[in-house]
Length: 179
Length: 250
Length: 195
Image 1: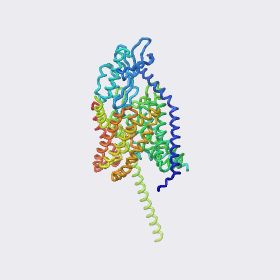
Image 2 (image 1 turned 135 degrees about the horizontal axis):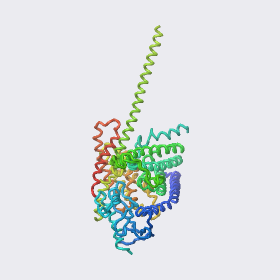
Image 3 (image 1 turned 120 degrees about the horizontal axis):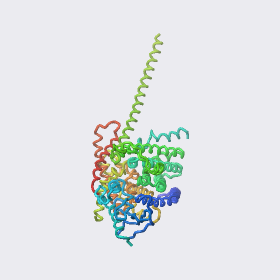
């Protein structure tokens, strides 16, 4: 007949419960402390990104949500005005492939030519070289149309996905507002 | 606890028992975050925070943790502090958090944190554990900053401050502070090999070899000194014996 | 490209191109610690593979169907490490009962799988990159295959290395790291593959 040491088992169980309780409080405290700061950081990053795409003098309208299945990668866009004249739009796009998620802010000029991009989020695997091989090349190129299709650069999956996102933003602007 | 004991537990991990160079623990972050000096320093900061907090808490609880659930308790405590550090970093140092990525979570399974908890904090008092945590943190930070310095200077040619700790860039009027060493306006002697993973392994291997060579040299010197001292003592004893026997003969 | 094609390309990529030890830097402590024992390196690779795949398979639904709807996504690290610790304990018990010779040869390395960065790294990556279940499993399978491959090659090289005359300062870990650097260079050549 196995003698179960109840007293000891209660002690161990009680200790574990108390430990988890205290640590849970620590984490909850941390969460309360930081939750607002984290969401404020996200908004600030977006605003800073908008400024990087079109410069400090630009004024941005309110964000317009895009809920069109044909443009599934686009989340929302802002209309950009410099001194009252509309000069283009900035689209917030994101896509996921087998390596991770990439979120971009794509600027499209009024004449439908491609503008600058800003990377909001790139959760691809640590060793991925998407930024080096494709996005930096695109950012530094004078004529963006010529480099946007160079996807066979060593980060082909990620580059194809980014190219599709950029083209989708351009087409959306060309095709007028979707519903 | 004597004062010298405190001093010993604080100073030892910084160089003599450096957790990276001597005990070879915590190799994964030492290779992954050492591409730039700022990232390495930031990682050292977060690591020290986690180590100190977990050491203190485990040492405070060491008398009431039951034997059977020792290791799971340590793991839960360390995981809690890593989660706390993740939340704080995401809120107050977002660039550092996005640079380090997954490696902040991997502090949970960092051999040093768990190792110090089991070997030291579970057997010593709170003050000693605190000092040990700070000492190990400083030692590890120094070690990975050394490797990061070599890799960044050789790999990208210049030291860039302000990318991760943006307040430095703000001090400089919005521009990152760059110290041109091997690469500057007009010349480029940097070898991007050292920024790649292969370069990381090579730099770590060579630095460890240098540390081993220095330790060997010191040990050899000690051995040679000991042998010389023993020889001298023998000669003195022989001279003394000769002198006394001469006197007796007289 | 259909899903199965993407799945297989992802496995190949995680095995060779984004290799877990030589590009992503997980699992280095066990990689270096395995030394020159070829057979035990394969056993270790098999044990780690099992833990990685099971941990990824359990933690993905745990995060996406339990933690996120409950509004506590920040508990992912604690949940993951507890799942991994339990898995390693179970693997140890099963091995002790059914494969005692294997258990003896692995010795101290079995509990050390809990602190292997590769296991927690794969689980954390799956969560951070917001991958779906298929790609998460591709990550796990690719990582396991890559780890076993690299650890086996490394043990074979170390066997040769024991017999050669290394300078005194480099004996042991430093020369092992230089060998790892050359292996990383070799694997770097695969990065040009257009995936």
